[in-house]
Image (cartoon, rainbow, N blue to C red):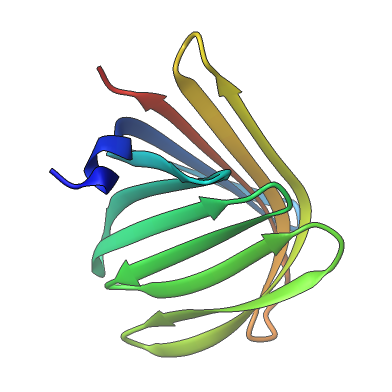
Length: 146
C-alpha cells in the first residue's frame, strides 16, 4: 500500500446540478462513489460518472480561492472557478472541442467533522462557444463511507 492510498477516504457523492436558461430550470441529480483526499490544504474529490457517451473520471481540486473541475474519458473537460472574473476552459467530446467561459458567483465549501460529510457549492454563469449563457448551480455533497 502506498502512502497516497492511506490518505484516501472512500466517499459517497451526490451531485446535483440546476441549470437556468431564461424562465426554464432543469435539475439533474446523480449518486456515485469515489474518494476524498488532501494534498496540503487542497481538497481532491474523485469519482466516476456514466452517461450516454460512456464512462467519465471526474476530479475536483478545491483550494481556498478557486476550484478546478477536470473530466477525462468519454468527455474531456477543464473548467476553472475563481471569484472576481471570467475564466476560460474547454469541453471535448466525440463531436469536437468547445470553448467555455465561466463567471463564478459563489464558491462555498463546508465540512462537518462530526458527521464526516461535506458540501461544495458552485454558482456560475456558463458561456459555451457563443451560446446563450446559462445560470448554473452545482452542489457536490459527499460523505465518508465507513
